[in-house]
Length: 282
Ligand code: NAP
Image (tube, rainbow, N blue to C red):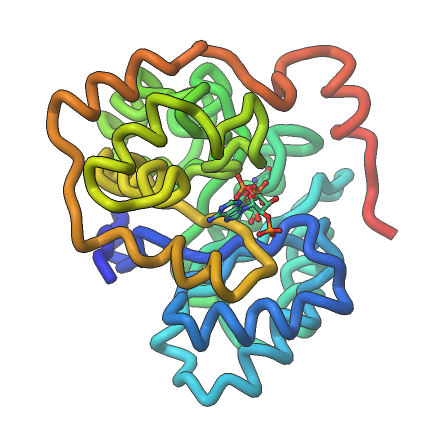
């Protein structure tokens, strides 16, 4: 597995396994199958409601803790965010059955962001999170966070797929030492991604599926990807992307698919802010 080295020296696999929308009762089996298929980076979140199941799969995997890279995410916290973030991190660690996280991400750019971030900085200083980062931060908010805090996020996990490619944003992140990570790398199949004629044609040239072309395209750009699947056959397909290379011409062709906007939601849209920023985990 290829790796990326984050700005603080933490080494992270470039391809992992995401568990969003996998029901808690199916997650242990899915994660066990993913680990058996060779995935070592696991991406969950407090908001997904399946951290305990991820923890059981880790415990039963027989894989040494230091060989795994486990990410979870902090949900939006009210003030006093420093106390609440500390408590939320303890809850996640307990549910996962771990004594440290490899990566702890602030899930949304809402709530007491600065209080949350300072608490996350403290967690990193104490070794409870090897790396810390954010998700769903647009450039303005990311830069403001960077400019006004001690630690620059090591990762920003944002919607990134062939229809919303984030090339300029990736460059800005690179300038500041922030690793881009893709969520929704397949756009969850929206826009008929899996039957897209351009991607299918490129796949045919390499004897690869559309899913493999997309994951190769992401990782070849240096974007960390975390595809989700509950099917072992697709898990195996999705990790089998390191034995071919897209040509410059194919990369340029895929660049033409970019629409420059989200297929899900814009985190700066007032309706989305109201919906997400007010949600609390029970
Ligand atoms: P995704 O990975 O873009 O797409 C998952 C969908 O693709 C599922 O319906 C899956 O179906 C299907 N699929 C997977 N492999 C396939 C293949 N080889 N051929 C055909 N279909 C395939 O969607 P996502 O789960 O939203 O994103 C990935 C991960 O990013 C999440 O699991 C989560 O960890 C993270 N995420 C983070 C945020 C955030 O706010 N930070 C938001 C969304 C997601 P089956 O399962 O039936 O195979």
